[in-house]
Image (cartoon, rainbow, N blue to C red):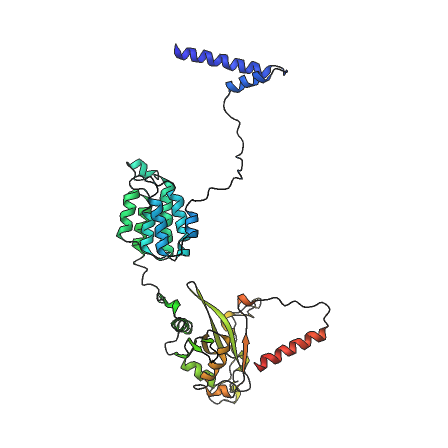
Length: 409
């Protein structure tokens, strides 16, 4: 009977709403429209409106920006957040802000700090209670945040430890996505630890001489190459009380390069070119090379096969080549000229001292002219503004004057 009453009342309500829609508009239609809205309460679908309200700033973002940039201040902010609330509301935003500020504090490679960040999560709250919860990604936002922490550890080469496994198990359980990520890292990291044959030593960026030696050995790729330190970085106090700093100058040259330089044609000059950039992790260093033009090689005397009594005359024809093929340019056959030596200097003014040091093992440099073809670095690029009213004769005089200065240098 109760179900029958519900059906009758629903039929009467639909009839009244249909009568309201057929009724002619009049001045007193506002209460009827409100009654119709009461009969059909579902809202009309519409696209979502873009709210121009600014997003809420993380409250601990200001603490990271005002604190001193060191490990103790970073850990202090994390402890302050953990002691503020037992439930630790806003822990996801806090962890994302901490991951962003880690390079600023210099703790992006510290395992202890990563474990401290994972300790920010509330314990035993996100652990699934049954198999269905673990299958449907229990608390997905928190698990994605923990995976971001492990991803950043992987990108910086930080291997987790037993404490990391304990924190993940206590927070998300053994069947969670962060635990799967942890197991994959622990599986692949030990296997790829010693696969790099050019492993960069830690802390080598602080010593410019050791950094130059390592980079030159890596560029030369010759075990017989000899590294010479022409000048060590030092400071000197002048008579007027000013302190003058001396930068480093390190060069490398092999026996094959000495032999090539000895066979260089005296009629052609040798060139000092650079600086060329070389990236070593996040450190950019510059190096210079001593080279020659491709046309500076001595022309070997080719023996005419017609005048040889030991080798008969023959024709070397490539019959497999089609006439439609055009092999006018081949990368493997491009001749760029031989490289005689390389160096790394803290200042371009030390390149003349490098050439003087090379003359001890290469006396040919005292007979051959040396031209310096140097280019400015990216930070020194400047656009030369030419006047529109300048004549072509003035521009020619400027170019000749620049060439004279280069030759004098």
